Image (cartoon, rainbow, N blue to C red; front, top):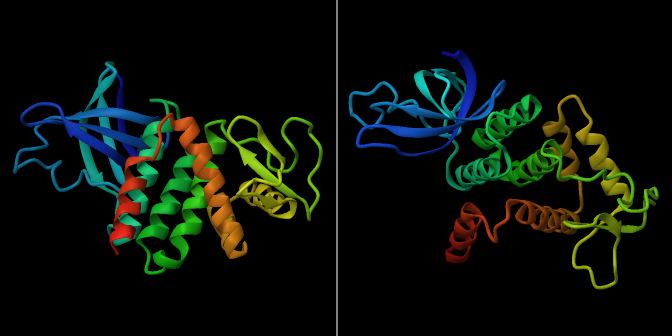
Length: 253
């Protein structure tokens, strides 16, 4: 029986497995996304009950050789409190992206570190002004780690270098190309190259967050539109559930 102990991880999602147990979808640093059955977790006396919360770093131990392993223990890893409000919904949105785009047991340690940094930003007192830029940074890193992000310092089909003042559009099926007159979203070449440099930084989420935050307001909005279209294309769905919920709440307010 394979045994893993004290593996850093986060709960992405959980669902009922029986009257007393749940299946936990966890994102771990060394093992990627794993499915774990937490036996008895729904009982009021269960040690799992107060610990298996989203957006909290945990130390997870499990065993077994089946596709769904058996969770042996889960301990809170300490750190920040749970995000609230829009920051909480942003965290659920990031979790949904990971569920849609990551295959099980495919490790992405750099992406795990970026996710941990995102959670820290969302839980901080500065979450409101930084959350949007942090999400854009995480979306870029997730797309890159899963092989869905083309090089952003050259046109995809021609390999032609980007000119700083020219406009370029990121499209799902064609990568990065020169913008057309009727394109609703694009970025200047200088902006795409700045994002390329930030993604290569030793602390890519922080560097990319800062680069996104320094973009002009209209450029940030256009980056969001292009990334959303790319993510929806690769997720194979229309609007993600958490994104739709956030839009509905914003419409009500």
